Length: 209
Image (cartoon, rainbow, N blue to C red; front, side, top):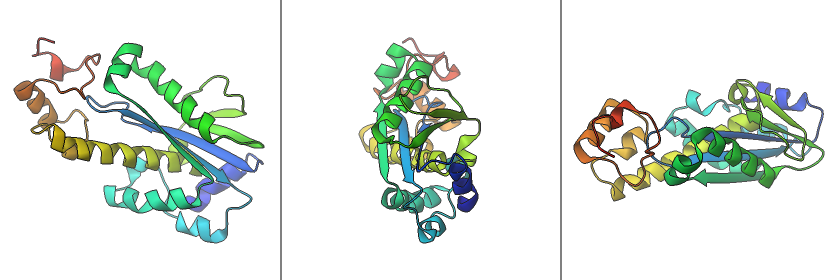
């Protein structure tokens, strides 16, 4: 899989390919995490490509698989950037605007010339670098797939740590997504400082916020 994804990135004919993706866009609680990964295709070795042979969209991996890929990506990538946006910031600025800004900021931290910046699905406007929005990019581009893994693993680790500070919400299990257990905890406990109050979720309808 990874070899095919790197072949896609090489098809742009540039030395540097940066990819960005986010995790947590559809969550009720916790931060939005955007990551960008830059690969230097001229310095990438066949051994590096083999090491990332399992690289794919983070949603196609188990948590154990993402945990194994995480340090490999950090070692092999030329640059990695992680940008987070908290729940109050999402509520204030709106999810879509926050998401696009986080992806732009992450790519700005890693981009190099001669290169191209790739984002998963969303066009990001003027980045000051060649930019392409790739539909389904986390399953097509190695750089975007790597960013997907970094963003998801970073966010999941944060939510597992947050579980101890917000007992009863079971953040370690659902990492903020709208599961039956999460909705029941909101009904029983109310909301925590990690919850996004701007979401029009059925989980909030019974609360007086």
